[in-house]
Image 1 (spheres, helix red, strand yellow):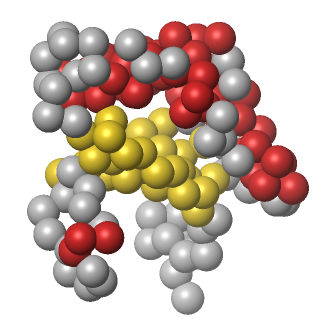
Image 2 (image 1 turned 30 degrees about the vertical axis):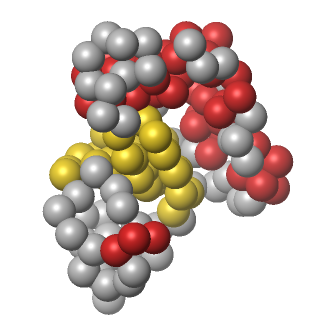
Length: 139
């Protein structure tokens, strides 16, 4: 089995901690799944579902929520070969500090095993809101 701590090391904690932490943050998750889970227990999607079941509790414990998820269908702009994703999710946290607390928790280290088993690639991009029709920031 893959060592789950190797991918947690990809967490750019210092970069996130250096940013202002005065507002909620939305994390854009982009995922590409393995055909088979590294542990042989189903597909990459199956492993990701096990990861999701574990992390939703951790997200909620930090005051976060899953805003949106969806299946990636096609690259509409850009090089398709450089942007092959299977799934995307938007997860909102009350602060970057809350996100970092979740990502560095013992519970996440356990859940991360399933993420590593299921995802061939997983990128998370921190987004600072500049406009949202949902929040009432309508110009």
